[in-house]
Image (tube, rainbow, N blue to C red; front, side):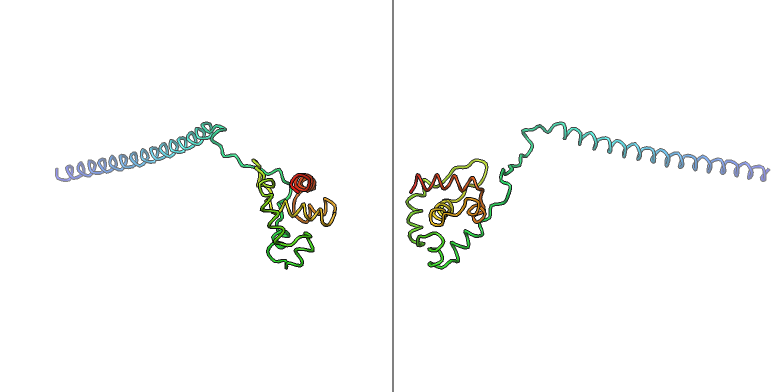
Amino acid sequence: MAEGNLNEEREKFGLFKTILNARRQRRRMQQSILNTVIARRGLILKVFSFILLLVSLDESQQVTVLRSCRRFQRNLGWWNTVWNTYSEKRFKQNLRVSRGTFQFILDQTRHDLERDVVCEDPIPPDMRLAICLYRLGRGDYYFTIAEMFGVGVSTVAAITEDVCVRSL
C-alpha cells in the first residue's frame, strides 16, 4: 500500500510539474506576443505621428530660403585691396583723385549713392563712387570694370549713368 501511495504521489508530482511547465511556457508565449503587439503599436504610432506632422505643415510655416538672382558671388577683393593697401600715389593713379578728395566726394553724395534693395545686399556707396570715377578716369569697357569690381556689366552701366550723370 505504501508503494501504491508512492506511485500515486509521483504521478501527481509529475502531473503538477507538467502543468507548471505548461503555465510557464504559456506565460512566456503570452509575454512574447504582448511584446510584439506593443512594438507594432509603437511603430504604427510613430508612423502616424510622422504622417500627421507632414500633413499639418502648411506653406506658411515652412522656412523660405532667399535666393540670389546673382549668378556669381560679388568679389570685393580688388576694391578692398585698393582702399586698404594701395599707397596714395597708386590710389590716385587708379581713380584719378586723392583719397581725401574721394572721401570728400563720398561724404557729399552719400545720400544719392545709397540704395534700398529688398532682395540682396546693395553695392556700398564707396564702391559705386569708385566704379564711376574709374570709368570716368580710364574709359575702360563696362565688361572690364565689371570683372574688376565683381559686379554685372549692366550694373556698371547703370551706376555710370546714375552716379556720374546725376550726382556729379
